[in-house]
Image (cartoon, rainbow, N blue to C red):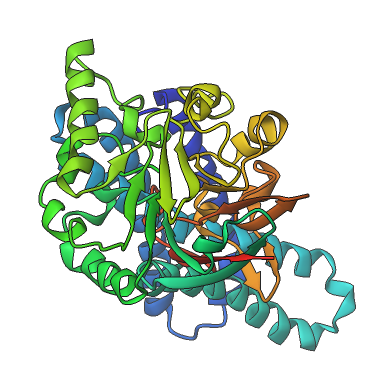
Length: 405
């Protein structure tokens, strides 16, 4: 909310009010069947108390943001975000559904309308409401291991069956220091016995204070060969207001230093050569590279400078847009690992088919993609940001096995 102007916040509140007025109007066509006037008054009163309370809380929070400590601010924003989504979307769907039923009323007889309209209307409102609640209280930390096998002609034989754990977008500030949640993730990852662990950015939401206490959890991650990481767009502190450039830089340095404390090699537009019995592969890491409004800190040419002659390269690049815009055109990188999109934390995955609203912004937003002999895998994120839930897109741990074709 802090990044939005007061004008935008007012427009949001007006939208909430308009949808609530419409949904309240249609609600009356259902509550009129209640034979107890007292109960009907309670429902109507509760409806408007919630609406007025929500709008008041949003405006109050916006006006008080600068005076709050960062932890309380973040907690209030995510709580209000969850309340707004769980209220606005079901009411919007309810209003649309019952309006359609009303304007197509000729389909039903008068007697049928007395049953069909209230039943379908209530279902259209309550079903998305409970789906959202399920996404908040059940799916948010229901971690899923995605198992992928990829075959390459140019994979060196000594790296056959290489096991890679790919995780992304932790956003540690959103966990509110509930360390036990990620302790479960650490156990899952270590049980998979990976050769590499690759983390593709967005360790924090904005600030280095979010890292407090997480060292003792994340340093337990174990990999046989190595642990590597890159930075994401949220790791640079670009979305916070700073009293000075020095404070912003100090925050940035603290985030970078944290990787040393958990024994991860942070790749800042650089590469590392991994050797096994005279055969080599390269792990390449670029800083964040994104389309506007995201900044381009990444420098692919610089990252590849010392590994041009290595035939098999794995690139860590936070934003999957980078693969299509630069990686495919200017390199022979075999496998690119990205994150960033979170799969919008909402969508549908069924067998080999998937859909999410985020696909209208990102061509490559989740799962495995191939272009000739080059592959991209986009992790849907382990943490969350903004909306405190996941609807159909579970938090992901990716196990990738590399094989020689």
